[in-house]
Image (cartoon, rainbow, N blue to C red; front, side, top):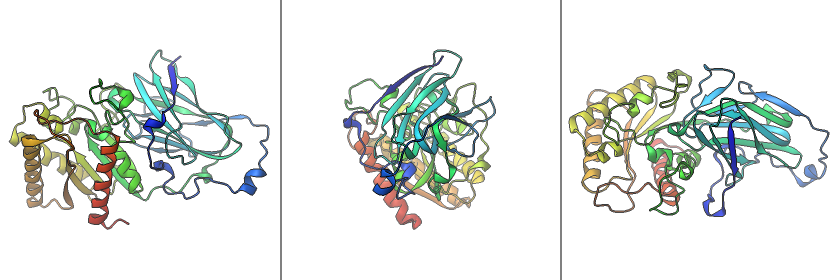
Length: 386
């Protein structure tokens, strides 16, 4: 059976913002005191909700081609269910490791963390929530870890009670696709000690700037991010599995990966945050970098003709690296516009420190929130979003 650990967050990791799944629902299934007082739990039975049931709301790139499950690889992939009952269990598996935040009834922070590691070829039943007061509940499983660490194989949910599609909140009207490296994944965002060794446990796509921007703007998110990957060259100097390559797929490097059909989901905005790893490699070629940026934006425009495309930089590059990266991206944007590509925008996330190496630390939770607030305010102003 697959190994599983169930962990809880400490108050030190608390976020001050409500969870994204409930931003479109004022009540989040809240009930009046009179209704609650009248609830008496009936004799409940476990009911099975398979991965492909229309009772579930699944967000993120999906891979249904490998078996009786759906594979969710990218950060910020979500499964949401509304039900009347007291408990949930999930049937899951992974080829390596994944971390899921569990959000219940619109709470401001995840109530628990599911850390699931590979230890065999059979899926496991994992407790998601238990002991809830009988009534209507909304639960979201949020993949906070990136595809590099492992895929989330989701077979379905067992409900102690009854799932009800009609209880789901209204779907998001806005859609944002983020494309980036470890910054967009929220790498080390929960690390309290800057000198600590990086670990998947410190990564949270939800608390990263991308996840928080999506929440602030009330948007569904597709988060196509991968640590160490570059636009024209990776952090380690290699040129395999560049971000524009893995962008075409439902995941990064695992055998389960299949090509993604971009017609399945058209975002209103695509935010591209690439360049940090290229410059961190120390082997940036100006012509190659600019041409790679032009080619990638042209491809995204072909997939999403109506989308606004934001070319982003930062916030880890400082000094000469930052100046050069911004200049190269400005040149790419100007060249694209001269070729007739419209609806292009540029924005910069400002670094919070200095470094003699030209690369600063991954942003922490507070810095990521500040970045999300500045980016979302700019997007509201530019795009007329209220």
